[in-house]
Image (tube, rainbow, N blue to C red; front, top):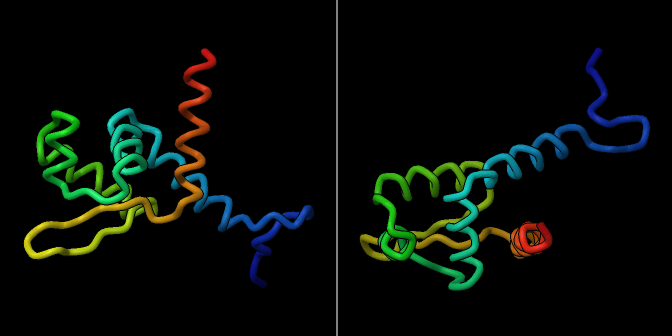
Length: 105
């Protein structure tokens, strides 16, 4: 017998776990900075991201890969460059909310 994937209140457990994993993936200062930058500029290459944030290319690539694997970012190839963008506009709302909470402290 297969276990139910919803709670008695109708919550979808796999969806909740997926959302929690996405939130965990953005819970890092460098990743928040990357997301804020992409919220402002919409689409950027790895080079533009690491130069703007003044971090190593390998560090930027690692964080971008984590965000992409968790479904937070989308990427596309443009010649030799990989261009990143925030996958859904609803993530911009979450980023704005986090920033507002930081200002209130």
